[in-house]
Image (cartoon, rainbow, N blue to C red; front, side, top):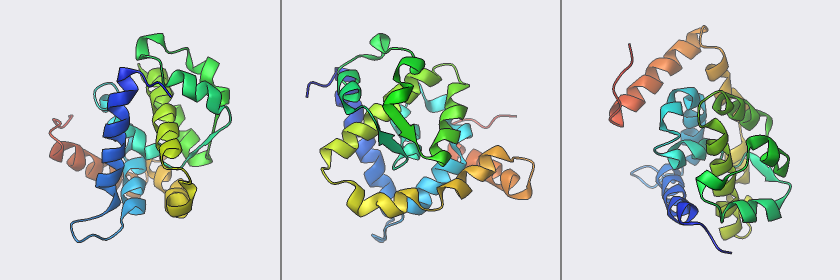
Length: 180
């Protein structure tokens, strides 16, 4: 498979991001909780979709079924300026219900279509490179994901405001300025 230079660089960064999320400093597997946290903070990470898409794309990890792998293989050889519209690509994948909610959020952003195409290609390339990927992470990647997205949709509830504060704290720790 011939990857574009865009995906050649990003696939390594995406894999590194997932590896960083995999375990804590004591070596405990905490991928599930970290992915849940990323999903809950997804809307707050939208400013990063152009500069660090791999850091946001991991929120979709384990939530995409690939209906048309041939199209994804072809897309992975394209540079972003050559990407088709999302409408031309959308049928190549099927999102889990929680991942569809994230996709809907992304599509409201400028650059959201490009980000989603990047995301589905990164997840496809990750899965393809690991052979039988669904064995080790299938349960943890899919478990309790709908709950993680609830806070994104209902910012007025008490948990939503806590998530908003936690998300703002996390972004500040990453070097982003606080809004407001």
